[in-house]
Image (cartoon, rainbow, N blue to C red; front, top):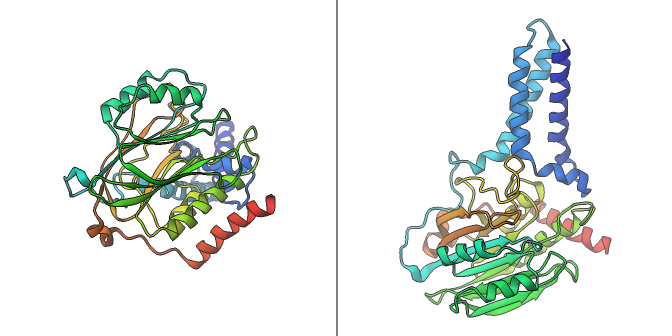
Amino acid sequence: MVFKDFLKGFGIIAIIISLLPLLPVDFWWIRMFDFPHIQLTAITFTAIIAYFLEFDKKDRKDYFFTVLLTVCFIYQFSKLAPYTFFYEKEVNNATLTDTKNRVKLLTANVLQKNEQDKELIKIIKDLNPDILIFTEANQRWQNAITSNISTEYKYKVEMPLENTYGILMYSKFELIEPQVKFMVTDTIPSIHTKFKMSSGEVAQLYAVHPTPPMPQENPLSTDRDAELMLTVELARKSILPVIVIGDFNDVAWSPITELFQRTSELLDIRVGRGLYNTFNADSYFLRWPLDHIYVSPEFRVADILNCDNINSDHFPYYTELYFEPKGAKEQLPEPASKEDLKEAKREIKKLKNKQ
């Protein structure tokens, strides 16, 4: 009986934690429960199995509680299902082999206090990406990278900062009208630029790193959410194919990132391929996808991977894309609903009201 009571308590906690993220509030202690969904799904499944061992067929409460746990598990798993190999890919596999239409991207949160850069430099040399994006980069990181990467990276945008929000971009492709933007505050930069592929085709790229909802960073998710929605507005207005890349400080299945994807009408390269958890590199149990690459339907995926540990708390995230505009109609997303677009504007309005 004591063990059964323990299981009930364990199950109730799992149910409560599952329901908390559904609350439409920006408090960090609510939004933090968006993150450990993988772990919560595993815990709920374990609770169901364990409870069956003590199941009493004559007790209606056991039926009710088991059904409740099962519904909770199904909901949780439905959030993760898109990031399994059983799900249809949002971004199809590349069909071209002409490297003139290829774009190789590497993004990494390097961890500002990390002073070991050899592993990152090795990854850059091994993968030979066309465009590099580094977040949480300070002046030391800028010096280390620029003194070790190939001279082929002729184009660059550098905004090193000591507040853990510095951002750097290096490109073999010509960058057109590159700008550093401070969309939310004057301490959180993002990079907005067009780039010209070897074929001469031009695309728009937004590299972002919004602030996370954490007590030591920001007690509310308002700033992060608004920056993502402001990026949505830019992506929707762009007449060029779009790539949004960076450390979102949010997981792919959270309400705000799901809203970002629906309203931007961009595609997640992870869907149908895997979770590719980029954080926390220091923990085998507490890991989830925080770094993201979203693309418009003109792009297709040839490769995607998490790179080796670089002594940061994030793994670098890499993809090889091909520009295939003729096949865009084959993977068009659903148009954003009016209600979703209104919700995106409400998120931006929250920021204005806060200021």
